[in-house]
Length: 145
Image (cartoon, rainbow, N blue to C red; front, side):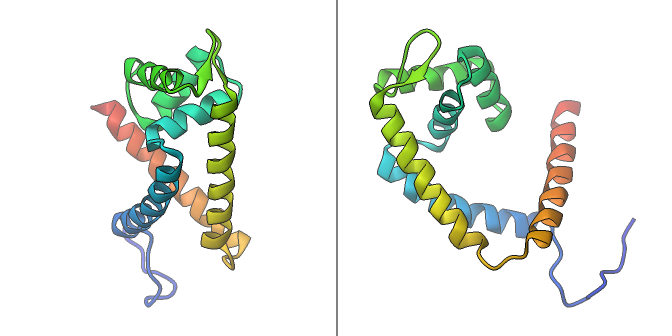
């Protein structure tokens, strides 16, 4: 069902606008990550451990977030341990891991403030709901094969 926009001159949320925003944000994020020495996938795994998840829980979250298999998610945790950022069977951050995580988290918080400054909360809520619906539908498409 196609509907007519309330304001025909207003841009519509679509795959192109989402893609453009994603790639712009990812480029800035990757610049922040370069300073930490992490890949994006590694940063997701480090965050899962920083949130207190055990190895299985961290691997599950990483797999679901990045849409990768359990073996790949577990390998990311192994890479972080090999780099001295995680330790233990129930992984926890080492001092070095905590420092990397804290610096990256602080950098992302500053970036978020700059990128979303001046956008009204109501508009951000609407965009979040729309993106959640689109993501759920895309995940359903993936699950359907």
